[in-house]
Every structure is written in C-alpha cells, then in structure tokens.
Length: 355
Image (tube, rainbow, N blue to C red; front, side, top):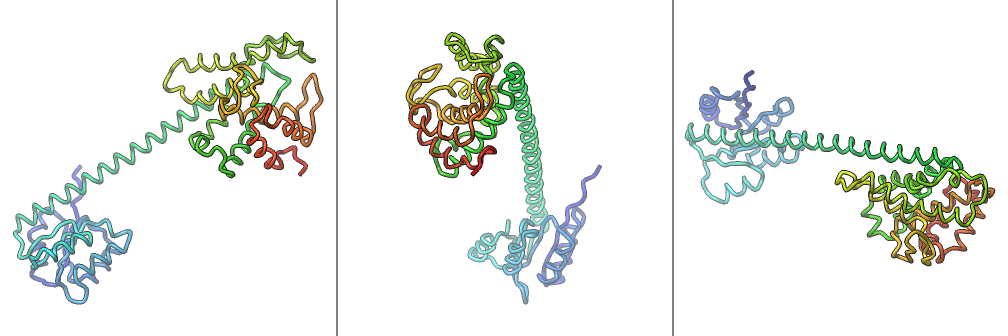
C-alpha cells in the first residue's frame, strides 16, 4: 500500500513564486499555495501540512511575525517551517532560526536544491515520528509488564498470607488490620517528615502488601502450640518465638536468590525484625535502638497494637485507650520513642478510637 503524499504549504505574496514553487514540488507532494500569512493561519485551522515554506518579506504580517504566531499555538508549533528569503545576511538567518525555523533557503531558489532540502527535512521528520511511536509503544509495553509483575507479586504475597491465616485461627484478620495500622503510621511519618530519607526510598505500596507476611514463620510452628486454647508455657513460648527466623528462612527459600524476587526484601525485614525491642531485649537477633531496621520498628507498633485490642485464648481484648497507654508506657523500652509519639498523635484515626 502506497504511503499518502506529504503536504506542503507554500506561503508567499508573489504569485510568480507560488507558481514556480508548485510546479517544482507538485510531482512529489501535495502543495497548497497561500498568498499571505493571515490566509495561512485560516487554512491551518482546517488543514495540517507536513511542512511550511514561508516567505520572510511579506506585507502586513511578515514571515518572522507569522512564525511567532505559529509558535504561540500549541497545535501548530510543531509544524516544521523553512524560510524563503532574498535576504542573505547572517543576522536575518540567525533571527529566523532562533524563532524556530528549521532551515533558511535563499531566493531565487534552485529547484533541485529546494527539492533536496525538503526531502531531507521530511525524512528527518518521518524518522523522528517513527522513533517517537517506537518509544511510546515501548513505554506501554514496559508499563504493561510492570503491571503484570506487580499483580503476580501481590498474588504471591496474598496466597502465602492466607496460608498463615488458615494455620493460626486465633488471629483472624490480624494481617489486614496491621496493614491498615501500618499504612496510617507511615502516612503520618511522611506528613511529619520523620525518617524522611529512608521512608522516601520505600515502595510504600509494596511495603504494605509485604506486611501480610510478617508472621509467615508461624507456618512452621506445631499446631499444638499455634492453636493452643490457653496461655503458653515458657518452653512453648520459646518455640513460638522461632517464627521470626522461620519467616526469614521461608522468604529466602521463596526468593532463592532470584533477581525477580527482590520485592520480597521488605517481607524478609518485616518477618525477621518485628519482635525486636528498642532496649535490645527482643528477638531473634537482640538488636537495639536504630540498629533495628526502621521497617521492623514501625511494624512492631502495628503488630502489638492489634494484638492488644484483639481477643486471644489467654486474654480478653484491651480497649483502644488501654492499648495506647500500654504502648505509651513502653516508649523507649520496647518501641522507638519517636515512632510512639507519631503513633499516639494519629491514633484517633484508628477504627477502634473513640476520640
């Protein structure tokens, strides 16, 4: 299938020049001859040429003024313009190029030279459009691939999190509630500019999705302990504490060093450090203060708050106010004191809040 002919608009107040130009170009292009800049602007409302040949010395509106009019119209400013002029001084040529013209051809023009210059500029224009189309298509492909990868990541996270929920029936809904708490807490940290350098590096959406895996290690805890309808013995508690390291190991096995599994890095940190304590008395690593990853310190507050307000076989749920007071009392011992302050300031946003 033949490509459509390119359209050239030739603008000149001299009828002779219009006739000559059309005669030279009509065998290869569709040529509109236009006697003035004002008429050009009228035609451009209905027609978009591939290139404009614009005379500089015209009455009423000269070529420079006409080009400025084109540049002021977003829908017209990308039409390439070549000036036609009898002037040969460098200042005039530079002025036209500075205004946005792509070339400058002297009159009287040589027909072969005119043809060659136009052919060259239209070829460059076609290549630029082809490159832009390629880039646009490539961008769409990248965005589609990204959406597919993100969807797959979220499915993996949700599926594994559901396995944990099925194993531990005593903590139903814990994952979703801690995710919501985490979201509010991170939002408040961002609003207050807290730990801004680190938080700005997070993919918050992925952090929130990964939070569902913070207790994934419970899959490896025996049912006799995980589902025990009463308080755990000291030995049983030591056993269940192992779920943090079990979680790290499970996530490492899923990732298996695969570059495409880097999204699990958030889940690994959350699973392994959400039971560390600010004073160093937590587990499994006994980390202290800011040696505890920020993700783990934030998750610790969300995890404990939900455990406090929820029913457990060994306790009744605490009220929202009681839970806040317990967390306040452990400011600087169990929890990062700065994070506790942020948490208490935004606690009214919680569903259980009576504020």
